[in-house]
Image (cartoon, rainbow over all chains, first blue to last red):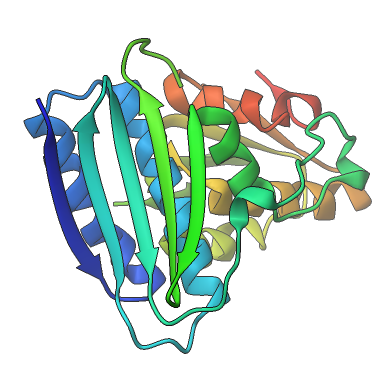
Length: 141
Length: 94
């Protein structure tokens, strides 16, 4: 079975409520378990808010695609008219550091990479596209 | 719906979904803390790195004055996120 939906959202943090309404509807329709739903909502929020933060003046909406395919969940976010920014190449965060050496930010993308099976980035014709794959075979975070 | 509220002496209760759109609302409560405070996660369904950022910023500020946040009633996927983030090493988790 292969199912794909796509919706575009305004470039603002306040859009998260409508994004989660959209994802929860998809997860319910496809009987996605709570652990995978939690993980993918987390992933989508981190990727979406990064796109908002790094291109706040861009007037284009951001595309979110959800797909159940090949035994997993695929999430794809596409940003338009933007410079390349490969968030998959951001350095890892050392989560063993003591409090005084920990940064307040920078944790989101690191967690995304540790929670899913695959993250791909491409930049083509001014479009930045991040595709995440999470296997549905094991029910964990 | 997210809520952060004082729920007793030196306790903050979190309810709902703590995403990036709720950071300012949470900061109103966390920035006012000035002594050791327990954060009760019993009714929190979701947290993202934005929420984790509020907690770590508060922990840094309180630690500088000899106080701290402690975390209680962490369960399920929210608890998993804290361990993924290594927060068990910088917070006391009850």
